[in-house]
Image (cartoon, rainbow, N blue to C red):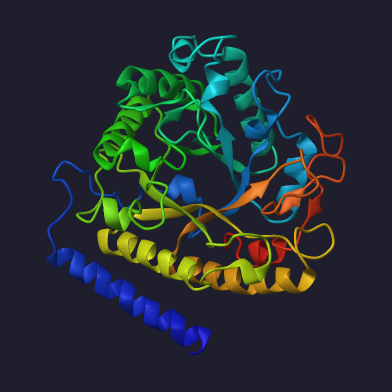
Length: 384
């Protein structure tokens, strides 16, 4: 089947999905329908947004000076020159509320918000905006604290089991309250990769708590709400078969999922089933079309290949071919996509597509190097 025919077929499927959605039971009656102009400012004339995740604040770890992990101006100049117009900025909760020496997770959550760190995040948002790049502010914890990305941190607490509604309200009121008037803020991502151990109903409730906290500040930017981190059981089609659940008076809710191939290493032969990641994207896109909601791929990534890469040039091309198909599907569904990831703190990382020739915190050069994945990313930028 040609790409044109494939896109035509998907258009039929999407139309059918919308028709079926009109016949099926609707979402919660108090869910606000999406106003026709809800995402005009967010999209800024584009049908969808494309960019990268910035990961320096997570790599910086605990104890770093506020601002040390900020990407320098040169990083944003480089990314803008490559066509990037949106970044998803990972902000660790444990940097906003720091666990005192010898203290527990609950001791950390009892600490005041670090206003110097908030100022550093605001400064980075302004640096990006100076190059026409807007920021999705991502609270990079899975409804957990201090556990964020990676293996579980002993002593962590979870939403509903140590983390209370007040804790979530405190952190999001501080973040959104500080950033609501920044023109460079595109959206807020409530939780990153919520953990399955939190539980479906508990997670859905706390996502609503986060949205309520954001709106209580007067912030009107869209909110991203993710499915649960898992293979299939936590994805939105599984946890929300009856449709979207977030109640937002503005109607500006964007549902999001993350996508990676099931692979045990960077070699292309390490993939268990190359088509599985495409099937998952189709399931997600169909759910979004059925319920007529805006959706985003918050993370997608694959290994770099060739010079400076994590695998061979040949394998890098195989990975690129697979994920070029992924981006084709994302184009057809009209999904926003932020690739994972980019940082000036590294010269290479298995999934990193944009790195620094002189890494550091701060880096003297910033992000200045594009790896093999950039070919695909830059072939599917935001149409203007």
